[in-house]
Length: 85
Image (cartoon, rainbow, N blue to C red; front, side, top):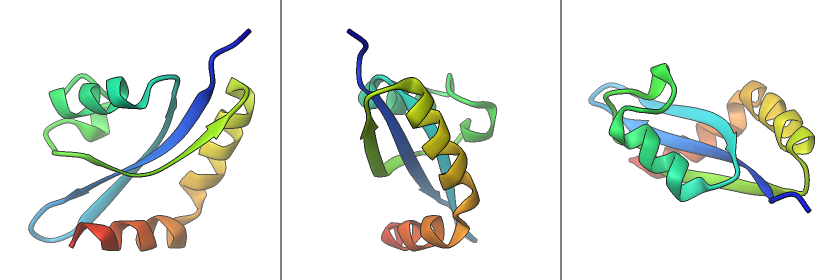
């Protein structure tokens, strides 16, 4: 049996803008801690991230497909980023 896979959207705010990051994982708390400790993706280093959204999938393929789509849904991510203000 395989573990559930999650797609997540992180948000970070600096003085001038809100940023989002989309990824997938088997363990959201561990992955968020990695991003916040500077050991996550290069584009997330040096920022404080919060979890804005997550979705659960039965397979890695489903999660990766949804990740691909979320990365292209800029309007949805912009709406999520409004939570950061």
